[in-house]
Length: 366
Image 1: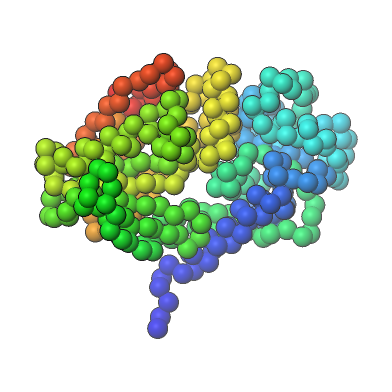
Image 2: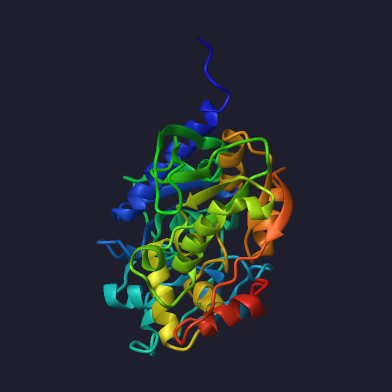
């Protein structure tokens, strides 16, 4: 039996998965690419704080007033800074753990305001530095690293990191009938990645036929979906979407599909989302909170949703969303969006600023 064509890609992705696991455990990783090799540990999980430099995101460098010191022409690149108080940058120094964490975590800025001065260094491996930031996002940790000299490190390449994010790694694992409150005619389909431990879910509501289904892409939100958080509109949107699908005949369809994507916090993970909440409590809106942490405003990958739809044999949808980026994301992956259907949820005293920010800064049609 010949091997499926995607297996070499999966093998690379699995190597990235090992590196992600190593970072979460506080172990060193060795990242290699076309511009060299760097060995590093994540600041957040490190137990050994010997380092020759610290690598931080571009937005964190801007907060620490280092962006104008960077020798890189691209101000969006990560920035490497010298260990404070250490003279020889070619040999490891020792940084106080509390200071390292304060450098990495913007939620501590008010409690730890006097951290500098810092000095930016030449970034030797821009491609590798960017791959490290992506590994941090996948690991759900702060994008800050101790550059170290440790022979015992998990090896990973830039290509491995790119392979990890590929939607081609996803396949259907199992499916079962699932009556739900919204409809007794429900079927749940579980999707698994050969690289990532994250499992995505599709819920088919109603009886499938030849009509174009009403589809909702819903990103996981533990606080909103499960705990009933009033800070966002996620939970009400989830349940309203399922309710709308039960009356899909009024939307020129007789069935619907809910894709439940495990991309918490717009792709930055639960713990980093809670850090973003802490920053919102300090006065930053949801956009600035994400970027202040060192992540994109929206790091979700809608290619995952497109691949799930392909595996379900769906190539056209009526998309239930207020977010034009979801329409563009699916159409970029050759899924035809026949119609965008609005999903309006009233605000409350706790989330009105959040909804206003989505409308004014991220283009949601509210």
